[in-house]
Image 1 (tube, rainbow, N blue to C red):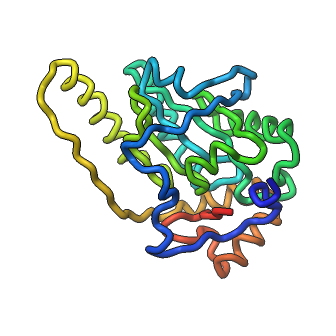
Image 2: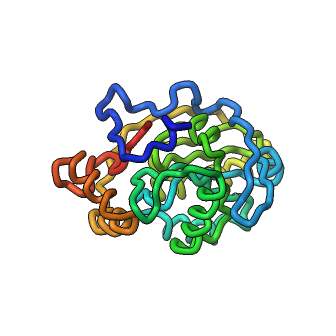
Length: 242
């Protein structure tokens, strides 16, 4: 647990050798089952959710700038897709940039309180689940700060990315719902597997805002890690993997 809930920000490896954030979990494989409690105390099991809808899993925390950057768009996506047979679930992880105001988690109670604060501050409209203190679900799905997955009604991973990317996620969900219609009408179709590398340019103002929210310690550690560049890497601005 100490290796997971580290008190300090740690910079991940960068470059092509570390592109695949979870090599043992690929598109087409069964999604690892989990059962977590949400911030309201309700137990949520993944297989029960996929029995009724496709499920989007988004991982993140209060001190992740990338999480905060994309949440407004994810909220809008939930408003659009949730009544079309898609559920979005947020899984609260460790604090990526622990600071004086939001330190690393020392108890499950503390983690739940941080998740509730996160839901309130970011006005998250979809369910927020709280991972175990040792990050069992996060580590199983891939320990990047803000990965996302789509799990189909069949319980299979059909989309994954190490950092949430709303435009490609929206496009994929639209495709997935069209695929449902194709299957319903028994139209012959083939599986097509694709992989891509893309870049993201961090929102520097949002990074500054979230790090200051965490506390001066988080700001100092980010500046030290990236030579004064508060936004960090252009691929993933807060890629602590440990």
